[in-house]
Amino acid sequence: MAFIDTLDMKILKVLQTDARKPIVHVAREVGANEATVRRRVKKLKREGIIERFTVVLDYHKLGRNVKAFIGLKVQPPKLKEIVDELSGHPDVQVL
Image (tube, rainbow, N blue to C red):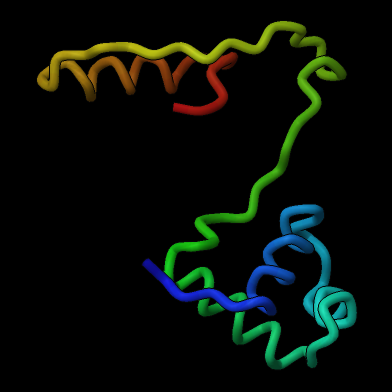
C-alpha cells in the first residue's frame, strides 16, 4: 500500500473535480508550489494511485437513456473471443 499524505489527498480531490485543471491552478488551490504538485502527480501516477485521467460523459445528452452494468461469467478459453466481440459494439463503453 502506498503512503499518501494530506497534500497528496488535496491534489487528488482537486483532480477528481477537474482532471484537466492546469498544474499551476492545482498548486494554487492546494497551497503548494507548481514543481511540488507536478512531482507529486508524477509519483501518484507511478505508484498507480492515479491510473488515468478520463472524461465523464452525460449519456442522456448523447441520446443514450439507458445505462447498464452487466456481469458475465466466461470460460477462460472464450474470454478473448467475447472481449473482441463486445469491444466492436458501438454502444459498449467499458469492458
